[in-house]
Amino acid sequence: MSALLKNVIGIIIFSSSYILSANTYYVSPVGNDLTGTGSINSPWFTLNRAWKLIATGDTIYMRGGTYNYGKQELIGKNGSPEDLIRIFAYPGETPVLKKYGKFAGNYWPRAILRISGNYIHIKGLEICYNTQENNDAYYGLIIYNGNNNICESLNVHHNGGTGISIENNSNDNLILNCDTHHNSDPLSTIKYGNADGIGLSHVPAGMTNRVRGCRFWWNSDDGIDPFGSDSRLIIDNCWSWYNGYIPDTFLIAGDGNGFKLGKSASDMGNIILISVSRCVSYKNRTAGFHQNNLRASVELFNNTAYLNGTVGFWLNDNNKPHVIKNNISYKNESYCYLTAESELLSNTFFINNKINPE
Image 1: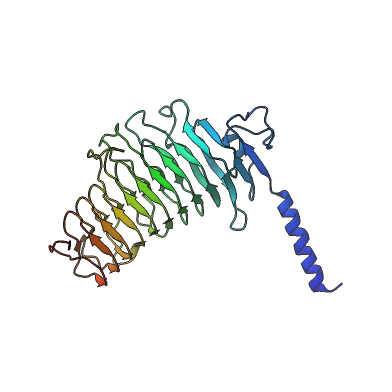
Image 2: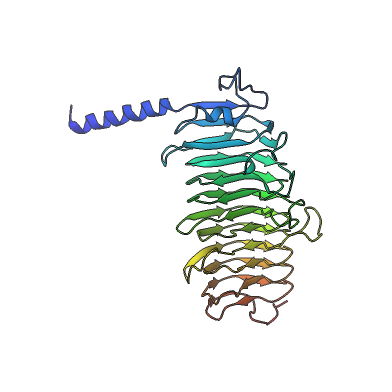
């Protein structure tokens, strides 16, 4: 037998044994953490129970129905670039994760689902009704010190704080095709000021996260908000509308920017920190796209701001050189403002105290 053939056979045997070693577990609203085995016919109830046995390459299927959950914490377990840990809705079914009991007596973060691990892929879940019990923020899902994770096709709504939040030392996470809506925090010290659709909070320099194909609406503060972060953020193909109001009304609530781009914690110079492309911001209470004291440059390609309550594009802070190409501002209430240092090409709007065209 040739050396090449021996190597090929060895690879096949190794790959087959690895695939066979990966496990599939099941949880169900009618499962039992004490008597269940994690099989499809004898599922567990909580993700916390399944997490005790999970390993690289394993899959957890969540059966459809409503899970009245205490805090579910996915901590200390990691997949790999080749073999992610997967938590998926069972095909054709919708698992709905809702808060059970009180979270106020528990330690921060008060989220239904927390990820503090690497290479975890969550798909197809509905996470909702983690309403406020005090003036703290009550998240739907938080990624805290988590890297290389994917949150896909999630429906996160009616929580008492930001729907999906990425925080602290979290790098290379992707939020993909998710809906975050009707998140509102009436009990906060600054009422309605801590419930964004997606937030990126205090993520340090040198890290990059991505938001792609997502929709944010009826959130009481902003659609998306990277407040206090010095990290790279790439936003693509997202829609943001009706933010800054008490949900399902047009009563004034929080800031109300469709895409808030700051503020940063530090002055990052003239590097491009945030990129926004092919996004639509419609009828938000204030700005369509707002720099919000980001001390860095941004690039915006092929975006549209329409019927927002103040400006379509506010990119006039700190004399930064932005790159603004192929954007449209139409029928917003007020002006667009850009720095004189910015590079402008093929935009359809006036700037610097000239009113938007009708």
